[in-house]
Amino acid sequence: MSLPPEIWLSVVSELPRTDLASFSLCCKAFRNLAVPILFRSIKLCDDSIAGFKAGGTLADMASYVRHLTFEGIDIEVTETVRWAQRCFEDLSQFPNITSIRINIAIIFELKVSLFGFIFRKLSCYQWYETLKKLDYEFQYLSPEEYSKSTPSAGSCVASTVNSIFRVPKDSPKAARIWNNPEMFDFWDYGVFIAPAFPPALEEVIIKVPGYLSSIGVGRKGRGPFCPSETLSTCANTLRKVDICISNMEFKPLNYHPPPQCPNVTVLTVYTRFKFIPTCLEELAARFPNVEFLDLGSGECLPISAYAECRGFEKVKEMRAPWPTRNQWDTQPLEEDEIMKGGLAQFWGLADPPTKLKRFEITRIAQRCKPKRVEEVVIKFVRRDRA
Image (tube, rainbow, N blue to C red; front, side, top):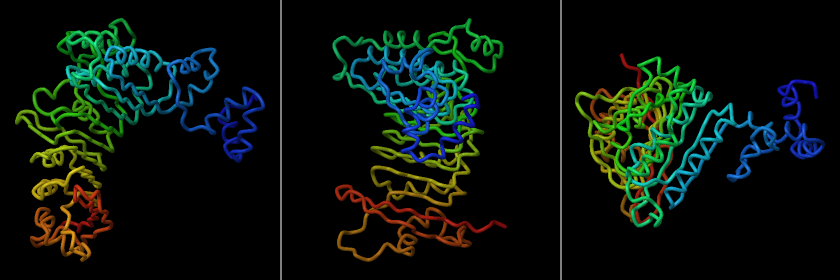
């Protein structure tokens, strides 16, 4: 057992799972080596997570944890706040996290603040600087869903959350940032905050109820508490972006053009209800080098929406909903039909010289009949430009 853990792991990882399970029963030291290989995912309750603390039965496994998921869906807002406090107190036990998922229900008054509050707290941990993936999702609680003990005033809850996610000025992390004016900003509450971005973030998933302006478009979309600020400050490291919102609305301001994320090659845009023009056009300006575009809308987009896809000049494959054909139409959806159906003209394919040398439909899937929407996956092979 005097060998380094890396050598032991390389040895036991070659064992069949049945032998590995038996190996883990020999002694505690063998179990600590085998468990990270036997179990890729462990679900813990609030009490059992204490086992990762010093002296706990799972303490030796804490360094192997790479991904954490926090799910705090609770009708009682104050209980959710207490849950969040408990979670963030426990984060320091895991030194090597590379991805984190946060799923939480909040009241409407915190729709702008909570994202920044969470980032402020996450930035206190050393692994924050190497965080690769962030999956952030929240749902609104309607007034009817508030329990009787939930404070009715949003400012009261906001003040409570603010105290939980505060970064103390006297902390080493805060001191380093405080001496660099370019790395911090202030919120309306007038409290110190840490920079709202992980410098190595490569993938971000944002699922919020509301409009695209909720992730940082326009005057209200600026500032360290906004997901858009994360997209801006991580522009050079991001590789994959997944946005899911209720309504696709984009209201840009002329003096605040969207910053480009030049390395993003995979973009997924999902809208639950209605699609408002100019959305894709603005997203194309922000993500100019996208190669795979997924418009995974639950509803069929209006044909005019595809005109805005022209801004994605480097797209190689696109997945998009398409208006269904008549039920009695048994002819296959051929390439020529799509070309004549409108998608081609919006992408400029019909105007010579064509930008593409092949326009290939790779898969067609019929979705639920009530919606009468077909999903079409199209691959583009672009001709080299002169």
